[in-house]
Length: 99
Image 1 (cartoon, rainbow, N blue to C red):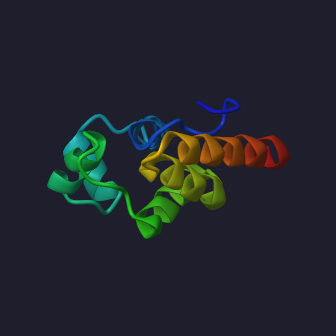
Image 2 (image 1 turned 120 degrees about the horizontal axis):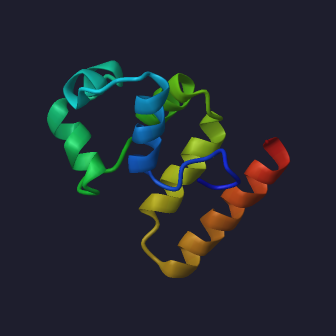
């Protein structure tokens, strides 16, 4: 968790919502997130990326800032190390100013 409030990656985001919803079955959980089973597992494995629209919906279900989740998604999708570092700094700065 970044600043104790924002998950470090999509898998952690899924786990956070899963724990908040006390959902044990991942298939039902995927349905709750409005994501197909195959897409859910592909995202968890890092084979596919979570879209901004789905990220915003999940942020709402997790009680997280949609802005922070969008920054997290950009951070995850960045390919180059220096770009990742910049997105990480943006996320840390955002969370330090927005709780």
